[in-house]
Image (cartoon, rainbow, N blue to C red; front, side, top):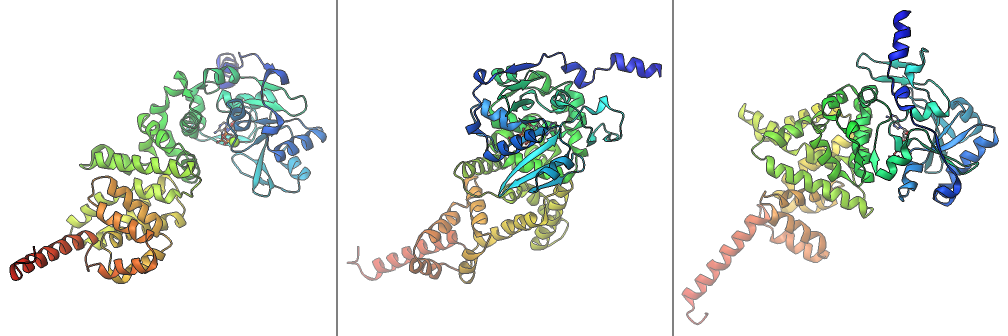
Amino acid sequence: MIKKIWQKIFETSPATQAKSHELRVLARDQHHVSRTQISKNALKVLYRLNSENFEAYLVGGGVRDILLGLSPKDFDIATNATPEQVGKIFRNSRLIGRRFRLAHILFGREVIEVATFRASHQESSSNHAQTSTHGLLVRDNVYGNLEEDAFRRDFTVNALYYCAKDLTILDYTGGLEDLEKRQLRLIGDPVTRYQEDPVRILRAIRLASKLELTIEKATAAPIPQLASMLEHVSSARLWDECNKLLLAGHAQKTWLQLMDMTVAEHLFQQTTTQLNQSENAENFHLFVNKALESTDKRIAQNKPVTPAFLFAVFLWEPLHALTQQLISKGLVPYEANQKAAARVLDIQRKTIAMPKRFSIVVREIWNLQSRLVHPKKRGIESLLQHPRFRAAYDFLCLRAHESENLETQAAWWTKIQDVPYEAQQKMIRELSPTSPKRKHSKTRKKRNTGKYAKRKTDPKAS
Ligand code: ATP
Ligand code: MG
């Protein structure tokens, strides 16, 4: 009992520490968030909840991004209605999540996420919150009020609430000031907050890269030390988070941060081992970097991207290292390569649960490489029609960039896609049984022989 009282007095829970900040309210004429920037569906949900006498606010990325002059990716709503009450009000809703129960309201392809106000779990003794032996919050369903909800959010800039009734913005944690300073700051004690949920490490890196914010000193400092806690996060959740990290249009910058803060090794251990140790490390660095750069470019141009492509890149050097190892143990190259591919993917999936439909694509990209490097006359047309041809070709082009001496092959494949059908057929007919590169040198040799022969037999020829 006495121990508990002492704990209550001296405990510096994230909430109690951070609550020193005063509530700041911005009236409509003190901010530039206008209803025209908010999705109509999000507004509908806010109005409807308000009309049912529930509190409801726009929060998170929706408010933060508009204040930063960006257009939000999605809109999140916080309310005092429970998920079940939300479910009853909106017929187009479904309840999701165990660790964190939420309502999704569906408007065609748009999903509005509605979360019930939560309290910090330290302030409750109920069994609606649960921590694992590592301090991870495995259940977070303790409902609270608006103020409590603000303090259990991750970063101050993510805890700004927009009220559709009086058009004010409420700031309990100093998010407005941090936005002005363009910094990302965790609410409360950073170590405790990362321990509760190590995914906040990835969110810090992702949001800082995406929004061009600096991670505030105390928020950044524990990251390298605590990054190993990511190993306790479920591999399914890490798959989702990695997709957000790498397919949001800022992969190159994000990857650099992941490497700098020694986080990457807890997600892509095989990749970082090769990047740090292998003889080919420098080329592999360039290869990875080029792939990330081209992913960002494709996203900027609204072209489709698949995470499988990046995984194929990340695991390319590990695949080679293991193949070589298996060959040295006596396996024939093909068998060694196939075994290595399966094993490398299995190891990666233990950390990041890439679904089968993507790992199949990774293997297809890898397997098509030898057919692209050593094309055979009979296989060209079917290869051009292969559903994974384009990805495998892009992969080859990236390899060609990084000193693998594959420029000729890549150029041949670029050309054959560009020329009309007749010319394609001609290219195929002219293809020697070996690779385009070998073919060119043979042609040159042949031509020389021809000229030489001509000169020899016909003195007038030159
Ligand atoms: P994005 O632009 O990627 O959607 P976001 O900040 O809106 O960024 P969401 O995943 O949509 O990210 O989360 C919505 C809000 O929920 C966040 O802004 C934050 O307030 C809260 N949140 C999300 N994940 C966490 C977490 N792990 N811990 C605490 N709060 C979180
Ligand atoms: Mg969001």
